[in-house]
Figure 1 (cartoon, protein in one colour):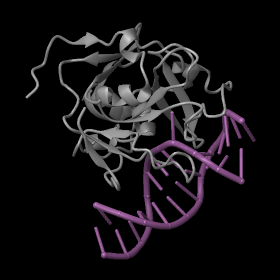
Figure 2 (cartoon, rainbow, N blue to C red):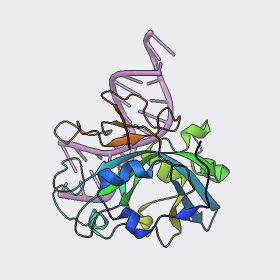
Figure 3 (cartoon, rainbow, N blue to C red):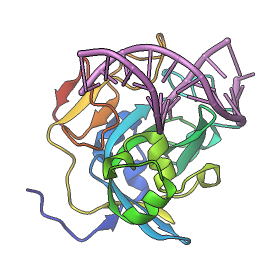
Length: 212
DNA sequence: GGTGTGATCGTA
DNA sequence: ACGATCACACCA
C-alpha cells in the first residue's frame, strides 16, 4: 500500500523529457482544476497515450508545426488542447524540450472531487465511471476547451499533483486507440492502470505487462 | 460483455 | 476527405 504524502505540484523539470518516459509516470497522478465557476475539480489519471513528432505518423506534429499544433512544439508543462471529430475536446500534456514535439494524451481518469459539478457538465453519465472514461469525456467533465490550449500546469488553474500514490507496478502497455493503419498503430504507447473501471476501452489485444 | 454506425466540423 | 470520439442501438 502506498502511503499518501503531502501533495506537491509537479515541477517544470518533471515534464522535460520524452513522452514515452513521462506517460507511465503520469498514471495515478492527480489532475486538479481550480475552476472559478464551480470550484475545485480533481481526478486521478488512469489512462494515457504517448505521442511524438516527426517520427510518429499518429501525431498531429508529424508534418511539422501548424497553427493547431503550435503548443506541442513549445515548452514542457503546458496543455495542448484540440477539437476532435467536430464534437469533443482532447487534452494533452506537452513534454520534452522546446522545439521538439512530444506530448501525452490524457484518456481516462477516476473522479475524486467536484463530482456533482462534473455530472452537471456530463448529463448523460449514468455512473461515475461515465464521467472521465475517455479523452472527450475527461475534457468535458473538467470544463476544458480551446481556451485552455497553452495553459501552464505549473502556474494553474490546472495543476498536476503527486499525492504519494505511485504509478501502478506493473502498468499495462497496449496499442493506441483510434489510429488507422500506417499511423504507428502497432506501437505499445498507451499506458493504463490495470483493471481500473475508468479506463476507456478494456479490450487490450497485444497488451503487455510492464515494469516501470 | 461485445460490435457497428451516425453526428459534426476544423484541419490540411 | 478525414479524423488521438461519443452515444446509442443492437446482439449476446
